[in-house]
Length: 101
Figure 1 (tube, rainbow, N blue to C red):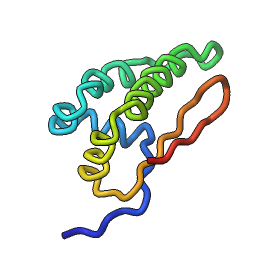
Figure 2: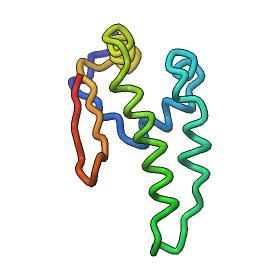
Figure 3: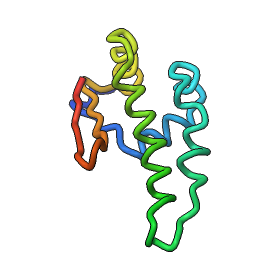
């Protein structure tokens, strides 16, 4: 059996990979459609930042869903990710908040 990871950070790339895996989408339905909403944003000119804000909001929504899961679902997530702990960094009010479970 593979050794457990000590800590896994749920960042954008990890979330998009999970959303692309049908097993994770079945286990965590809120991942359904996150690829379309996060990846479909076209890069803008860089001045307004609206496309980036849409992507960040979509990912923050998924991160929030991970945080509000029941303890049993969090344990299942850690089991599926082969990790002892999972950390979620969430942008809220211009600040980055970290949660570890």
